[in-house]
Every structure is written in structure tokens, then in C-alpha cells.
Image: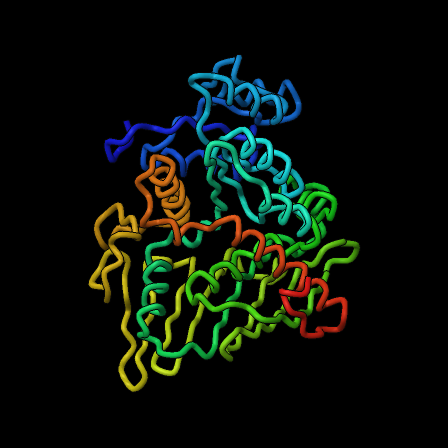
Length: 383
């Protein structure tokens, strides 16, 4: 049984075989709160890798597949078939599995971005899932307790009318041209597997989703400069984007995978006419909140924070005991499990959705088009 006393959900996985980083993360996240049992998988299209990976995870041989379509059909026909599936493949392999499982009536948990192309994203959004199957996009940074608190502070009016939003996500792991020698780098820098965007699709969408989640601001237009600094690289490895929001607020987003000295520097700063807040993912259990004319306040996860965010925060351990990346991922899995069971109405507006995925693709394409046109302001509604 799950930690909360509810029944466990039978989970499958597409992709994420031996050596796959994100597959491991999803499996750990699904187990943290005891809400899922992994019982089936199409972990690789290579039979030997699929079988080895499945057996290593304790899957029965007859539930180890090499084809996601076969898996969707077979599991939907079983009385004990999977109820949800995690899709942890490269971007170009999101659309097919998501479509197959939704049409089979199986809930889908999909890594971001939604698809490799905007056309596929819109096609996926137009599907009518069988048996009420639901969809979760794992923009996992929305699962941090203090990110949820930041959202509530903005919504409460504590910052006043939002004026300025600054989001950044610098890394340095692609500083050198090691693409061909690094499995994780090779598909992320390949337009046939990653899609239209490099750094913007891989990490820029995380920064964009975070600022949208916290502020609730609707993006009107972007002016972007996408650059490939490493010779021969086909996709961007550094992006600078200015944003205009409905209502007059302005924003800037920087994402880079060639910023030497940065490991995973996701950061968000939001400023209104009454106050501001600052949060960093590398120290996620603290957030600075400022009211104009008053000393800054340090808010802590599980501590004496303003407002009552208990319903959405999933704080697992006492204040002073840090929670991080895996726990944020687990929050999405746990709350989606409640939605699958019919008990998660309170989380419906908090979990990243199909619509968020489509908007993320619109953001990528609008930015790419803007950059091609020397940074011309480009409306998301026009792509």
C-alpha cells in the first residue's frame, strides 16, 4: 500500500533503460511516496537491452516489451494492466507513445518538452483520451515547496502588480564539443531527436515554465537571440530572450549550457510594485521575500512562512532537513496519483498540463523565429 494508505498504481515506462539518467530519476520519484509499482516497460527498442533492463528492475519477462504500441495494446487488454505510463525518451519519441497510451485509456506521465515539434504538440492536445485518461508533463521544478509558496505570494497580492520577472538557467556541461562521445549530449544537440531548440528546449523551457507557474502572467511576445558558440553544433547552446506580458510586465530569460562555472543554476526573481522574491534551485529550501521599505525576510521550507500552503507543498520532513530535486519530482508523481484515484481535485491547477506543454512549444518556436529575424518581437499567438 502507498504511504498514505491508498492503493498503489500500476506503472509502466517507455525508455529509460540501462544507463538512462532521466529514467532512473522518474523511477525513484515514483517510489518516494509509495504510490506506484513499476510492472511493465518498453525500456529500449533493442531486445537485449530491453530484456536486461527489465529484469534488472524485477519485471516479469512477459511484460518486457521492445515496442511501445505493442505494450499499449497488450497492457490495455490485461485485467492487471498498467494504469499509467512514464515516457522518458528523447523528445522526438514523445508524441507516438503519448498518443498510443492516451488512446488506449492509460494515463500518461511525460518528460518535457511535450514533443519535438509544435505541430505534434497540437495534434497530441487534440486527442480525446479513452476512458478519461489524464496527462502530466513533468516540469518538476513546480514541485518544490517554496516555488508553490512563491506562487501563492504572487496570487495573494503580496508583491503587488508584477512589473519585472528575471529567470535564468545556466550550465556549463556542453562548453566543449563532446557531443558525439556523450549519450546525453548527442541527442540533445541533434535537431532530428531534440527538435527545433537546443538549450532553449532542454533547459530554457524549464525556466519559462517556472516563471509562468509562479507569476501567472500570460506571455504576449518574445524577442530572442539564440546562439551556437561551439563550432559545428547544430542547435543553440546559449539563449537570451526578452519577454512582454499581458498587462505591461516585462521579463528576461537567459539559458546557457556553455556558462563555465555553472552546474545547474536555475533562478527566478519576481518584482512587483509592493515587493519582490528571489529563489534558486541550488538552495531550494530558502527564498528571499522583500516588502518595499522593509528588511528582507528569509523564508524556509517547512518553516515559519507567510500564508498557508500546506495543501499543495507536500513537505515530507521537518524544517531544517532539506528536500531537493528528487522530492520535487516525487511531488508531481504523488499528486498525479491522487488525481488518478479521483482524490486530487486540489492539485488540478498546480500540475503541469498538456496546455502547458503546447505553450512551451509555442515559446520555443516563437523564440527560434525571432532569433532568425534578428530578434524581432514575435507573438506566441502567431506561431
